[in-house]
Image (cartoon, rainbow, N blue to C red; front, side, top):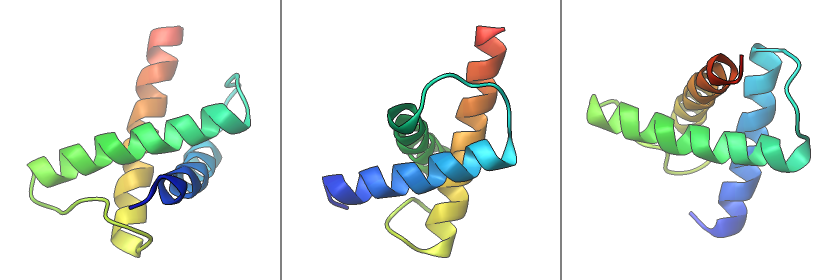
Length: 82
C-alpha cells in the first residue's frame, strides 16, 4: 500500500475506533490518523501471528483487523493515561 493509502486507511480506522469507544481523548485529525495507522499495524501483526490474515488494502477483512487493532491501542492508551 502507498503512503497516501495508509493515511486514508488510518483516518477511517481511527474515526471508527473513536466512534466505537467514545471518550474524552485529546488530539484531533492528526492523532486520529496516527491511532488508525498504529492500530492497523498492531492488528495486522496480531492477526498474522494467529494466522487470520493481514492488513493488505481496502477490503472488509483488513478494515475489521485494523479497527480491532485500533481499539486495542486506544484501550491501552487510556489505561496508561489514567
